Image 1 (cartoon, rainbow, N blue to C red):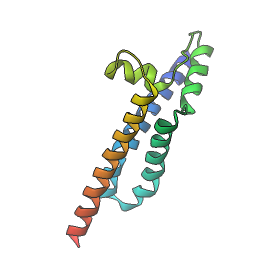
Image 2 (tube, one colour):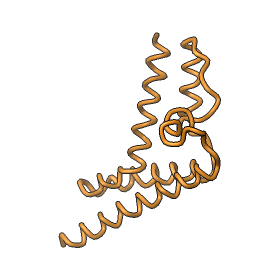
Image 3 (tube, rainbow, N blue to C red):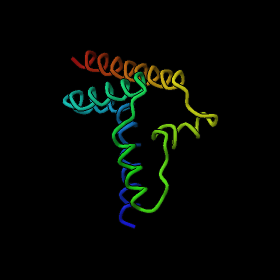
Length: 122
C-alpha cells in the first residue's frame, strides 16, 4: 500500500512538473525570481523531448509500482499517461519533438508577455 501511494505521488509530482515547465513562466509576472526556477525546468523539459530521454521520475515510479506488486510499464510517463489521451496510437520520436517545440513556443510566448507587461509598468 505504501509503495502504491508513493508511486501515485510520483505521478502527481511528474504531472505538476510538466505543467510548471509549460506554464511556470507566468509566475514571473508575480515574482521575478521565479525565472531562475522556471527556466531550468523548461530547458530540461525541452531537452527530454528533443533528445528522447527518459525523465528520472519515470523509472522511480515504475520501481515503486513493482514494489507495490504491479507490473509497472516499459514506456515513459508521457507515453503511458498523457499520449493515450492525446494520441491513442502511441508516441513516435517525431511526435515527441513536436511536443518539445510546442513547449518551447508556449514558453517563448509567456516570456514575451512577461517582458512586455513588465516593460509597460516602468
